[in-house]
Image (cartoon, rainbow over all chains, first blue to last red; front, side, top):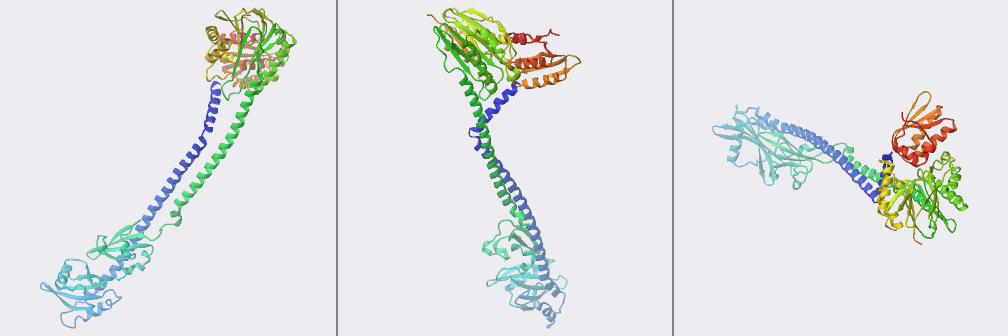
Length: 535
Length: 101
């Protein structure tokens, strides 16, 4: 049960925390969390998309490579065919070769030059040639190149230039017959590969290099400005066998290869994420504002009942001759419903004064209402001239816990300031301390049940206060602790009051309340103390 | 707060801290027992560790409501400290306090 009350305090403390600058912190947290999630999601989809793109590019590049291989086969085939014709050395016998290869030689044909050679001893002699003059014109270089082709199972390839034109030179040798076919093929001035009209190249930018290295000097064909090479961004590379060497094909996608959604998804996620963050922040702000409004009204309610409580306590204690009076009221922990403690001092006639201290059980506005009724009822009886026991007996018929929901403990007294004779009657309230010559003791008072339990006939107790004596009346908030017997609290109070007995009444009350009340005390406390002073 | 409904007298066992927070529970349990129409209700306070004025008020309330229905209420197994509280608050005039069992 105590835990429950503590929880309530906790809640209120948290609520206070919310109020001091936390809304922007919450918004910042939502913002940061949202951004992290958004970025992570966008990054993830981007990653997936990149991987997909790379895979698609590699697939397409492989297809392009296959197309290129086919094209190479088509180039090689006429050369291979030409070797099959086995011409003799006799003049005119080369006609068959000229016929066979002639269809593939010429401007806009496969080759610009083709020639047939035969091994004789260590050297090679040219039997016939068709087309333009070869770029490989140096006799020794030609002999060396053609001889080398005998050591290769496939055709050999090299590059040769004539003027600004680059040509690819092919040589294919037949070890058995000693014939060699030589041909040159021009690389188009625009550097476009004839194969790039094939659909396999449709989505790709490409650069085909002669040999395994991708250096500018080895560039064979490309569809981009050679100055813009090498290709950057997402690229794929594949090698295609080309005679005794390879063609290296480097590609990059011209546009997004995968589904358009896959490319747009990261952006969509970022956009959607930002919108969601904005909505979350706006919503949290609205909720926070409502919460604040609710808190404001709750705080208003607490503030109002506390103000009501204080308003019901006497504004001013009447001055009684030769009497030094001090009162104090301390509310319970902020935010906990207020209690119904009260005190009252009233001047009755030239000699007498009345005093009351009381405590309504429970808390909240209802308790305060019962307190107000008890306070003014008792005050009215005292002003009418009733004795304390009569005032209580009358009041006991006017309070009923079944109707009010509360009981009220109260002690009522009438004192004569000239004689120091005090008469009190008690309805279940804590008995007061009499501080006399440094000694504090509880006064034995006939105690009846609290108001609200039912009609009761109270008895009076009379005692005398000497000059200098102090009567210390209080409510149980000053002595009650959950973990100990009530007597322990009572003894602690008596010791404290005795110890501070040398002080003025106001100081005594102040110090005692501050000493005995914990910071987190839930119950409220009322104290009424008065001292007879020298005439 | 727990209760055992025997034949004849009813027993309401109150445990722990009885304060403004637990009073509604105590009242609910007590009223349920009273509704069964026993001729006597025993409120066992042996396991009570703390009781404040709201708790005492609740006991008064149970006693008054029982009285209206013609049911007697007895406090049983009252500890010394609770006994002292009842005395200080004048409630020993109101309650019939049974002998410890």
